[in-house]
Length: 313
Length: 327
Image 1 (cartoon, rainbow over the protein chains, first blue to last red):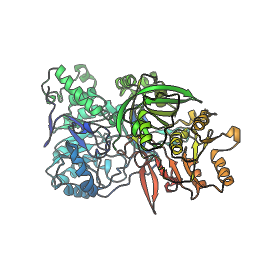
Image 2: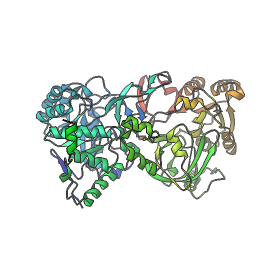
Image 3: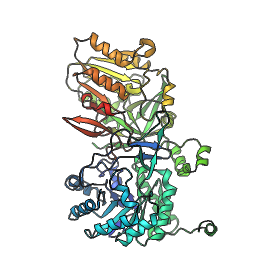
Image 4: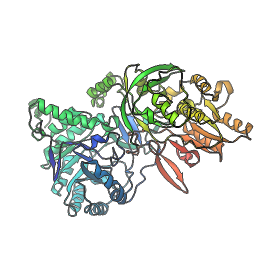
């Protein structure tokens, strides 16, 4: 059996497959519970300081070719309820829990981290500085290297936990944002969150999403996500958690070969809740087939085509 | 109870009416627990189609390739209401609850029958409609809260708009088992009836929804039903409902309705203070209450709350729903 275990900062995982934030809430409603305990980690729904009702109804999700747009608007019951109700139940999932935090200001991020610090059973913190669907905070923290670095530096002082900022592909210079986060003390970099997107009903001339714009996910974004993960992996020394449209084990392997130490699966889970486990098995089978002892050996092993160097400087 | 994830077997498929399909599935894990008003989250493409899509993934970003291909298959599951429950375990449960079973005679009793009725409106429902007996359909369910059927003595008045009739047959079945008198008004032509995910252009092409067969279905279980079509009656089902309630002012009714939102809002208005439950549709991703993608605005006292259609619905007290803010 190949060794699937990986370490991201201080978090050791049995395998490199994680469930992405916002897909399964806190895991409690997941139809195939057996899958969750066998994940490397589960990232919980992003939590804000105060409860948030999210964006107005009207469609919050719309299917698009090989993908979907969402504009939920960070609906969540707030950090108090996370601590009092959700975490105690989520701890029973029997896997690494990653808390995802979203704030409208540096102060809010700081307060969130402080409040969670004494709570047991959280293996890592993902900083959601990439949500495209909120007015304040969200993606705004992830667009600019200085802003992102400043936030990570500030939060870093209050936690010993593994700190993983999750970046947005909508940033103009994603590697620069990643480098700034690394310099500020991030233990790893997660990417990508959704691409900003839009769909229009041609009859009514109205956007199909109630909020007009949203975030694109699903297989449609995979090649674009893969490139960004490659670029960031080239730019930083810390581990990279790659995601964006992962559908099967081959996709996950592509991200790993591009430089990701671990991957997150999101939209595919809506289609088939057992898919993340299939991906774990698929990675294991691939390693056995290729006679590779550990998945860690595969990270960042992409070999660029020599001819390509002449095309792209 | 946590929803089950099951690969069910297609027992029977039948095209009915105008572009509607009835699909009877043998479902060991979902059917025995399903209640009227609940739904199943259906993976529409077959496994080989999904595999094909996986191979095509990402290529849609290249415009030239996308044009050269047929449209990519739908990714997300489709929520479909339970249309009919039948079969062994269902009957056993009925007997435990001491109500007599009503069976559609044509179906095998050995299976745990879960029947779906849906309209083919796009590539998702088309892929599902192409499935044949002996093939499998992947389901999550049963999901959501079904209709609340209390010990009330009021006559039940079912109001359907188009394919909104689907969940009302299972409901009628249950109401009849409990000895309730049931009347069903089925609206078969309503220019506003654009269910979720439907291209309006496709929808307009349905001049006749062809739901006449529903009258037979209702007839078989002792439900009086009226097909209200614009062609026949020159009115919408809601107009008919208004007159019906006026003419039967002496009778106490409990209303149950499913259909497009505009219709449901009108049913709610006409229901006044009568008890009225509505089954809502919304675009969904997870179907289990986790992603919060399918919320509607619902009154709770003086406050308005967002409630997920998939987990906290899909059935709501009509008077609680804030209709004017729904599109």
